Image (cartoon, one colour):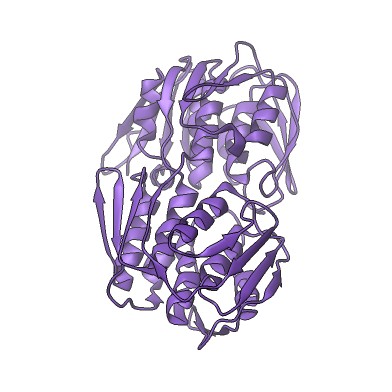
Length: 424
């Protein structure tokens, strides 16, 4: 029953180090299945989703151990090929073991995934795409089972540049016979990380980061070491927390190339940003201007920064319109923002944000990971104290978030007790 108590109205300033990328490390952990031996991943964030993925790998038979910020994964022994519902339901990224298990063993039985409640995220695209490599699928009591005596390279055109489908295709095809070409592939930074990691294992992947990826199949892969890059979504979240409080902060480790559209949008609101020797510095001294934005697959505006951007624009001068094109249920937290005085209405896939001068602190509940971050940003800029409950969602994707915010001057406390202590 942990919750945050936030005293709003404190300007954030200083520097904060951005942790390793959640969306990258989970896929790298799954890909470690493909090689026999010890994988070393460094700069790994200690977040709930990493611990869940570690449990998934352990259930499959791997040995997983943290040593400081290095995660050691030993896949030397023969692994099981069944990922249970009890673990996969807790995090959608667990479904990414499907491709590596098919690539190494030609068999996988994986429970249908869970994760944040932000809308339908069907796996039929994964199924159709992998079938092109020769995988025969069946559905049985909540499990998707794939069998492929031999994987064969093919040309696959994705209906949508899905990250998950692209990742499972990559990890399944690296040991397929012949060449696989993935058209309309996802282009996110974590796709590039996955391809680089696979190549270090001995794979031959070309074109990651573009819409066409070519994979030349190899007979076997070895374990490898990899440094997880900084998390662009965490960097964007901290940038918006600083800007929401009219602050000035440096995001150590952040990479501008991962956030080009996002940085362009905050510039349109009147914020300033510069690249430093250590990362990115952002600042704003006045009330932000309103701006319209649309979420799209990379290199578009990230859907994982939609909620945080809306919190920032809740106190902008003018009316902003946000359009969500990836998931249909990204706006579940808006009612909580409106309880803080925000004036936001939802019209289909659009959020109309009528800026007000100041939000008011109150009791709110996180509905998912990014919504929790958005409510925390709102609370930091609000007048008076706030309580944020159900912060287990936030813990899924942010490492030591409250401690890092305190480094910037925020007044945030994590309270652990068996029942919530509501504000008077």
